[in-house]
Image 1 (cartoon, rainbow over the protein chains, first blue to last red):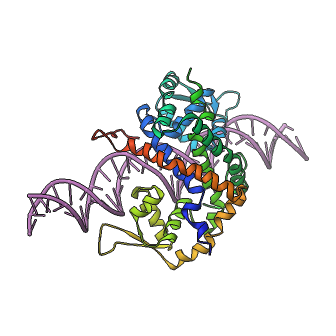
Image 2 (image 1 turned 60 degrees about the vertical axis):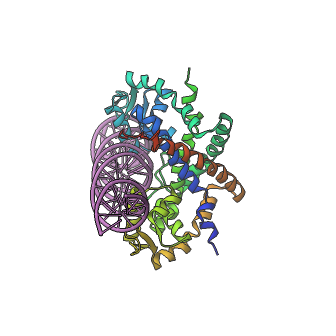
Image 3 (image 1 turned 30 degrees about the vertical axis):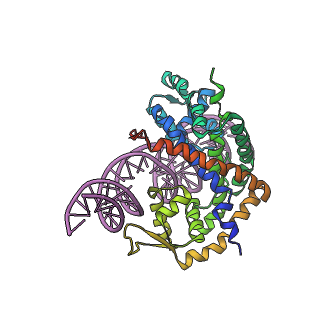
Length: 162
Length: 162
DNA sequence: TCAAAAAAGTTTGTGTGCAATTAAATCGTT
DNA sequence: AACGATTTAATTGCACACAAACTTTTTTGA
């Protein structure tokens, strides 16, 4: 009876899942030479826009919690791209600040997005259209995920084991 | 100069990455009661469509390799949902076959997709539209990802660690 | 004022993803 | 039949994701 709804082809979730992985794979060829993983690249994008942000600020933009970001930031620090330090005004927080090497990497990274579009064979218009479609999903998914128990933003909500 | 292209807001990759994670988070609330993770659920979707598939066959449909699938399949076996065995006709292969418990779980899982759409607040038409848009990206991303993972002019391109 | 609560990160444990390597079985060609 | 090439999974090593527990610091409120 309900076989149809369970077909892989009929689900929205799977193409999203598959595309996200394929995108990071496509990025890898361009990020490997920079010594970056895709999540590390995302963190740098955030810091290149505004330097010296706290873990929680970075997390709000990337929808990642500190449990994920702490190791990523430590690796970036270990690789000499950022420095983490606790500001004296609030010693709970940890700010990440770009080093000279971290700032310098921005120039090389600037070539990556266009290379990717080129690899994938998308023009700017179509890219923008798809981007807006997918982006429109985010608030609704946040609502759905938050409602049921993930820590999307601040609120605890979850009590059950994975 | 090239600041604009590096803005998080202008990238297609990030919404895809964010949505994929938010989707699995939204699924978690419905899959936890079934004792499944999202990748485990995907494997079962494939087996519910056709039982007894080889690791490579499952991998082709989910775009996952044996390095990822082997542990997932072992956990499904450990949880009593499938049995893995090597067919005598070709002892290299490993077929995964649903147990009675694995087949039984399909009835409960059949409620999940609709619950999700309900949580997210999407109607069927809009879902299908977005799904087709995202699905259209897959072949192009595969081409882009494959192009760089395999070989260029006969020589292996990849030698650097991640 | 000061103990309780809240906030901010870190740590721990589990489960993917994926590249690279390894091991075993099968196939193709001689 | 022999043997190198190919196929198929499993293994290894590293890097996310994320829930839950924990530590330290700051804020609150009776």
